[in-house]
Amino acid sequence: MIRRIAATFKNGTFVPDEVCDLPENTRVQVIIPRTKSIPPKVTDPDERRAILEKVVESMKSNPIPESAPRKFTREELHERR
Image (cartoon, rainbow, N blue to C red; front, side, top):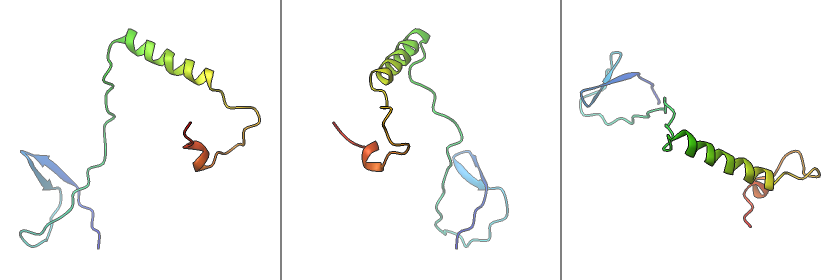
């Protein structure tokens, strides 16, 4: 049976936000959802602009053909050249 209990991380310990009637030493699994986006490693605006320009140029040099199907299969999406 899965039971979700909210908890707060305090002083290196997860403290349940509600009463939890588990026996002492019961092992549980804690799943922490990603709540923050990961900040980019490149913070210099000029360097970021250069990276973006390279990405856009790459996209322009590899356009999707007009005759392409509306939906690609998994194999087509992961095709290696």
